[in-house]
Length: 98
Ligand SMILES: [Zn+2]
Image 1 (tube, protein in one colour):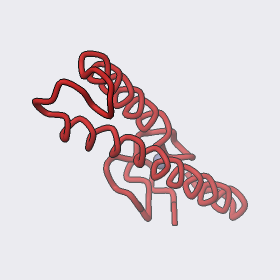
Image 2 (tube, protein in one colour; image 1 turned 60 degrees about the vertical axis):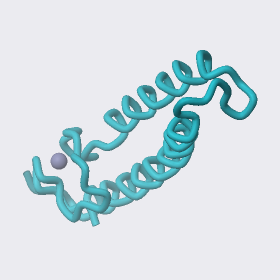
Image 3 (cartoon, rainbow, N blue to C red; image 1 turned 180 degrees about the horizontal axis):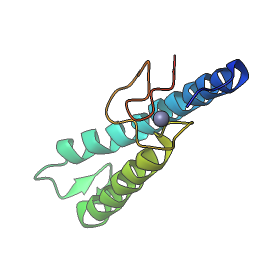
Image 4 (tube, rainbow, N blue to C red; image 1 turned 30 degrees about the horizontal axis):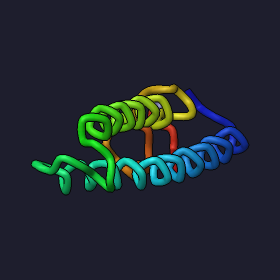
């Protein structure tokens, strides 16, 4: 499906915003995963009980993944963009993204 130049510019703007959101999201997720790995075999993490921190971290990671699935979609066809961090084209509909 052909898009106007204005629409293509809008898609590129949207994907820039989405990419930034993905990076912002990745920072706390990576921090949580690092904390979990460091706390392996420990009874407390940063002074908190692992029985509390473990499930809480799990929920945070799940929420992060859910947000990523929701956010990381083609602005044109709304299909998931996959693992590519900087796709030039949508692999589903072919719209230019950068
Ligand atoms: Zn698409």
